[in-house]
Length: 179
Image (cartoon, rainbow, N blue to C red; front, side, top):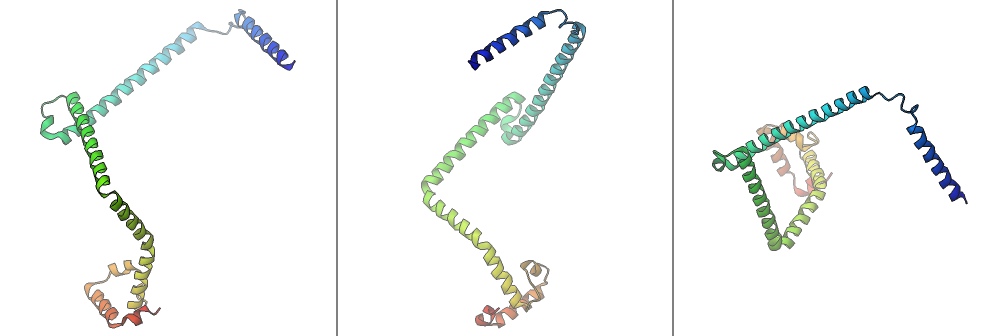
């Protein structure tokens, strides 16, 4: 029941709107001159946008041609910008195909080994903070607490570094291990 009343209400509203818009009183505030001016302004804006886009595309093409002339070298001498761009895009596609083939060949040859190398690198990255802390602890012990970080050693002279190394060598491994 409700469904039919909603449909009737929508139909009635649409009929009322149709009658209202066809009535001359509804069109009383429409100004054809103002509408024409607004349409002309929209068209002028569209033309300006198209011109800006054309200029941007021309700049992009010039930059692309300049880049490919540098890449192609003597092959691009005496060629038009369009020809240089075409040759450059062919070169780029050929290079990408070769790189993909080389990657596939490497993976086929060294896939498992490459995965092991990647895992070892990840393990080394995880261990880096601990190793940094161990190195800084060794610096503190060897310098008697005078130097705290590895960056502190960067400012030392050669003589100071040699003295620090002699001091560290003079301590036995058992002494250096003590905190």
